[in-house]
Image (cartoon, rainbow, N blue to C red; front, top):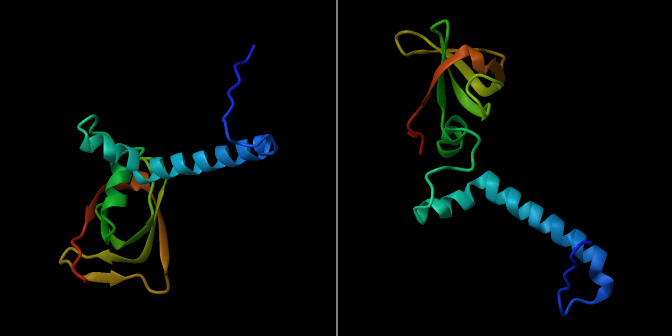
Length: 136
């Protein structure tokens, strides 16, 4: 036998509709908390945890530092650009880099003409540099 609960002050005609609306609102609220690290941010302030809501430190670094990046590839090339999308794990998925250009050994850029975005496998990336915001 299932337990039933009744909220006083809510008319019976809102039973099913109210339940559906409540479920949707709670789902959206919890998704917002999880995707924006709001719950864990409060827990960190209370010294309850040091964790984040993000699937990995990798993913959190991209969300916290919205800036141009340099991807250091396994074959020693370096790709410069603006990350539009990034994988949630370091070795699975792909990066989508807008306005990409190659960085030469002397630090100069070699633009990739005619290309607005470049998709590159995360398994090809050794590490990522987040550049300082110097365009403001």
